[in-house]
Image (cartoon, rainbow, N blue to C red; front, top):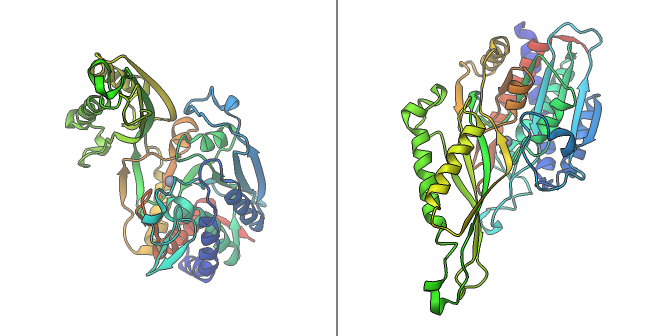
Length: 420
Ligand SMILES: [Zn+2]
């Protein structure tokens, strides 16, 4: 791309940046927790309409997704679980097509008194925007819109089909992105601007959610010896799970893409509930665990290992139920993406005057659906964030500006441009 054009595009991002921040603030103000994504999706549909995209808005249907590879079991109904796609069609297709995908769902904010300012009210201070979802990943979502807006401001329009997808349920299943693949959306490449600190993701882990219920025997505490305490029974189970976690992190079990990381596989107890009364020996305890698997590690094999580990550690207990809900996600390693990576590298270099780093992540993203089940190279590249899923989550706004510029240049090269 000639440098006059790339300068024009980067300046267009700068010129629109105040509007982008205002849009992002409005998006952060939508409390798009699971089941409450509608207002965020309304904003996205409006923004896509403003870009002249053809809007496809549909409600997800678990029954239609269930049989597909990559589906994760859900417990909450999908009434009003809405996905949005906005499609740009060129006058004459010259370049390669592209999907820009981002999720608008966010994780719960936790105790509000630990936030410096309310999580669903964007606050900008010292170059950072604070708010739940500002980094993960409404910042990147704003970049999808404003990268296209910059091309338009610069007088161009992608010379290939571009599909902008605003999905839900990335944070618990990924079924939103799966629904996009199931709806038939295909492209020559996919770009997902998750907050990855301006590096491209070389590989990501898979994730499963388990719910383990331990049965005890209730009794009055005065004769505790005849009871079986279901809450205390959980601790040896957790220790056993952490021993399995250690085994999976051992060098001989590592996937090569994660060889350099100190501790790629994390098992996390994220939720626990049990008992009914302080003076009763608890008859039940339920805890939920997030486990991770490597790319290529079959989920069924991982489940068998985990279940054997739990059953052995819980052999003396009255009962142990193991159920899966939420994430049933395989790992994904980026391969066969040399052309797209080259284009992203050139775009990144034009903005940053530095090479594009390629880094594995110990999290999972929606990239797996496109890469594993859709045969589409799926790049994850987005701005720098901090305290993601924590208190005072924040997004580096200068990083967002650079990523928006890189995305606009990437689209311009990958898709080509025609006169707007
Ligand atoms: Zn995310």
